[in-house]
Length: 168
Image 1 (cartoon, rainbow, N blue to C red):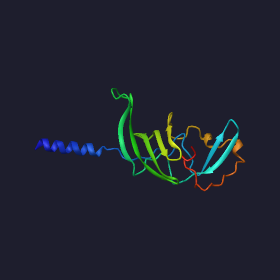
Image 2: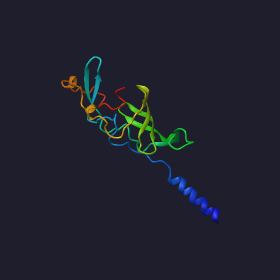
Image 3: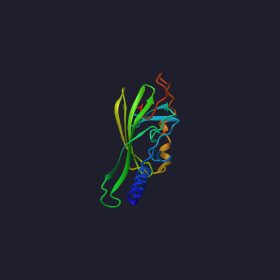
Image 4: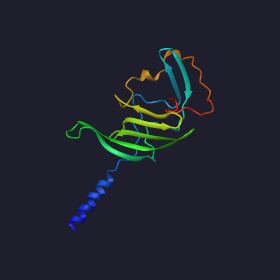
């Protein structure tokens, strides 16, 4: 009887620890604004403005995502030598059809590590995140450079508003 009770307690404990979909911190250096996207070429000093689709947030794990794996990046043999991450997979409906994604985020804090995104038009795109800082380290980076002052908002070319991944 004790063995059965122990087994039930361990089973409940294991099921309760299953990772859940998460959203990255609202302020994260390197994040995007969801009103206008600036495509800046600093070499040529050119600037284009395009609207972004406000319904798609690339750093959130969608509710319909499936957990692929939970692993330790680095070493788990000593404290502080590794990072526990969750990898989520799924499909996202885009203007030109469905796109597949695989996003890896930290278990604690939901800080993005990498995202793979596949569309029929562009193939696989890989985004790696590094030197993440929760919050905005330099708020001046959110101000477009002076040569963007006169940039005109581009008309949509029949494909709808731009998304994070449609600009690639």
